[in-house]
Image 1 (cartoon, rainbow, N blue to C red):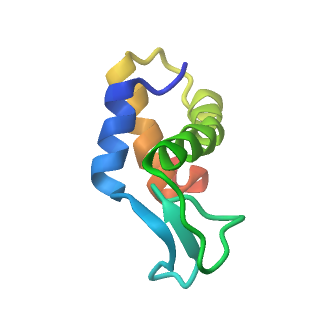
Image 2: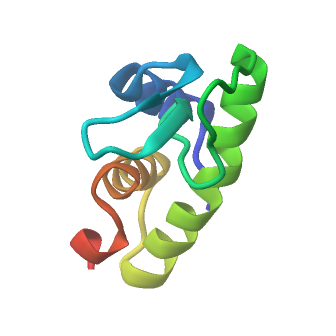
Image 3: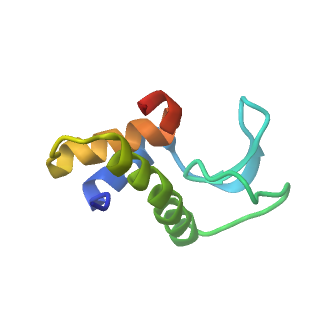
Length: 94
């Protein structure tokens, strides 16, 4: 399954969107909609780039939900679990 646009919109609402890189409370460089990893100080992106990064980042969490959840999910349930996993990690979902 893939996260629906409604699920992406939900994640965007919870995460917010910062178009300039910043240090999050965990002292990790972050940009866009919770994107970390290859972010450097002073980086700027567009809203479109932020959503593109989010969609790429979600692939990992979609896979984790697919691997860890063995019951059939409807789209809303899947979206909610991807949002949860995006926030707390696949270890917490497991």
